[in-house]
Image 1 (spheres, one colour):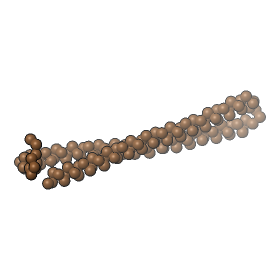
Image 2 (cartoon, one colour):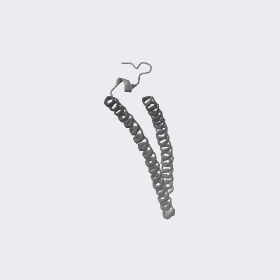
Image 3 (cartoon, one colour):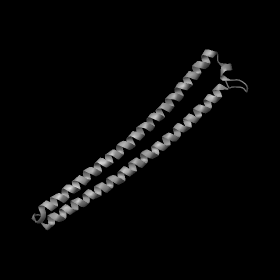
Length: 139
């Protein structure tokens, strides 16, 4: 039944029915908002974890480069020229891995931050809608 001008939900429902309807609406709104807040928290956690992973990989790659460099210094003249060239090639591959990881990390974090902004905007809109509906229900 559509509301006519001047009629409110309280006029259409008895006191118990109106509070039950209000309770159901409140529960739905609360679940939607809680779900969005949970998604935002999860995204924040993923951003932090991705940054940590990137830092760990960078440290591991640095150690690997250092180990290669130390090996080349210790081996000195015992390594033939073709072996030295092969080791230098491996060092370049390691550096390429590090750069690729930096790029992938940046892309992943940028995508997560975009998702975060979208969810945050959605949460703000839901909260604004809830506030508007609550004002309407109070009238």
